[in-house]
Length: 297
Image (cartoon, rainbow, N blue to C red; front, side, top):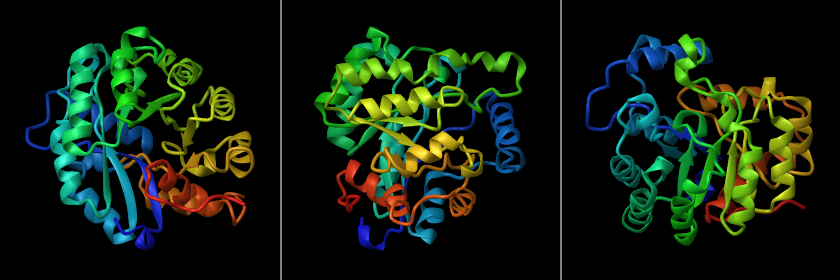
């Protein structure tokens, strides 16, 4: 990856289409609900972008992207997308894509073995957790064998926090329980794995201040700004991004639910200082991912 040719790094994109298998029953309705929530016609009108299509979109814009699926088959009944397939496709597009993976913590030692193999053999750089979709509290000790493997391999942990568009407006919220995604539960993980980089995904609504507190208090915790248009960021979130957390805020879109075109257009109108913008858009993520990048003054 030629970092000098990259204008931004999107730390949060999804591989929503199966790589080598058809969609599961019910998956169309699930994606249609997501599309309505995010006002994104792609999920309703047709298939969502594949990994190669995602790479082409981002390459055209000179934006690098961290990409992953979500292993939530235990809670949703939908087969997970293959971590190996996503990693292989990312490797074929390594000028623009950076592979993360997802493993349900309930897989215990089996999941830990998979995590080690994905890092060592497939170049996976981090792991995405979605407590609401996966039905677990992040500080549940049952998840620690997987965390230990990730920490020992030097990878990153990324946790969904706050409300989710998954199941929004669907009967019973599609069984999704918001309580699991309060970022305060990740505080315990940051204490127990102090040398492992941890990213809190999204502004953590309605627990925005808890997320800001955890990132402020724990040196290894960052926040990605995905999943929301910047025009809806709470004022305190923007204030911290501009000041106390300017080195720890990361651009993320939540592709394909929110496109970087939409996110960046709204971010341009946000009152962020000129010297902070490049940190959020590129440099903070570049350092976190070990790609280089400048520091703030």
